[in-house]
Length: 354
Ligand code: PMP
Image (tube, rainbow, N blue to C red; front, side, top):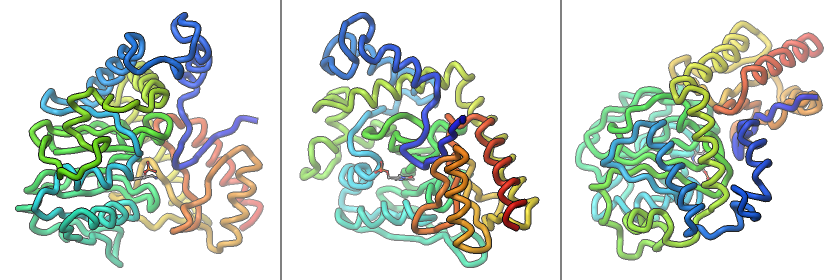
C-alpha cells in the first residue's frame, strides 16, 4: 500500500531526498563515516553548509543585504530571539491572524512592550483593515500561513515599520519578494527539512542591537559573525535541508513549487466546495495552500474519517486539537498523487457514510 503522510510537521520529505540521504548515510563522500559524525568545522561539512546557504539564496533570490542564519530551537526559539534582537526600548506590533501569531505575541510579552491587533472577525477569517497605523514600531510581526487554522495572508501587508514574518509553514512554497521584509524565519520541519533547525533571513543593518542579556545562541549578530557556528549546529538537519534545496532547484525552483502547490490546493478545495458532505468555511482569498482544513457534520464522523483514512494509508489527517476536524498538510514534498488518493478516499467515505 502506498502511504501518503499529511502530517503538519515534522512533515513528509521528498522521497528522492530520503533515498539519496539513505545511500550516503553510512559513508558520506567516501569518508567512511556519516555526515552526522564529522566535525562541523571540517572542510567537508563547511562545504555542505555553504552550499545549502547558496542554494537557499538562489531559490529565494535573497539580496546581499540579508544574512541567512541556520539556528537551533525551531520557530519558537525565534519567538524569543526576535524581541531580544529587535525590540530595543520600543514597542512591537503583533498582528493576530491565528494560533501561531498569538503564541508569538505571548512569548514576546516576556521581553518588552507588545501591542496586539486581532485581524480575526466573526464575519470572515480576517479583516485586513484592522491592521491600522503601523508607524513607529520596532517591528511588525505576522504569520502569513497559520498552520493550525488553515488561514493564509497571501498579500504582504503594507506597513511602515520593519516587517517580520513567521514563514514556518509556507517558506519556499511560493515566490516572494524578500526585500519587503526585515526578517523572515521558519522552523525547518515542514517545507525545509527535519526538525531542530530554524532558518532566519534578516536585514544586516538590523543586527548588533540585541538586548545585552540575549543568550549567545539566540544572538543574530553573533550567529552571523560565526557563520551560524557559534556552537555546534544541528548538522544533520542542516545537511538534509541542503539536499531539499537541491531537490527544489531540480524541480524548477520556487516558481515550479508554487504552480504545483496551487494545482494541489485547488483540486482539494474544489472537491470540498462541490460537496455538501465536507465543508471548509474559510473565504477563498484567505485559504491556505499548505494546510487544508475540512470538517464533517459531526465529531464522531470526523474521528471515523481519520481512523479509516489512516487504515487506507492516508496518514495524520487529524486536525489540530484546538480546532478539531481534519487537516491535510500538503507542503512541497506532497506529490499530486497524494491529493488524488485523498480525494478518492473522501469520495468513498462519503458514499459509505452520508
Ligand atoms: N509557527 C508556525 C507557523 C508553526 O506552524 C509552528 C509549528 N507547527 C511553529 C511556529 C512552532 O514551531 P517549532 O515547533 O519549530 O517551535
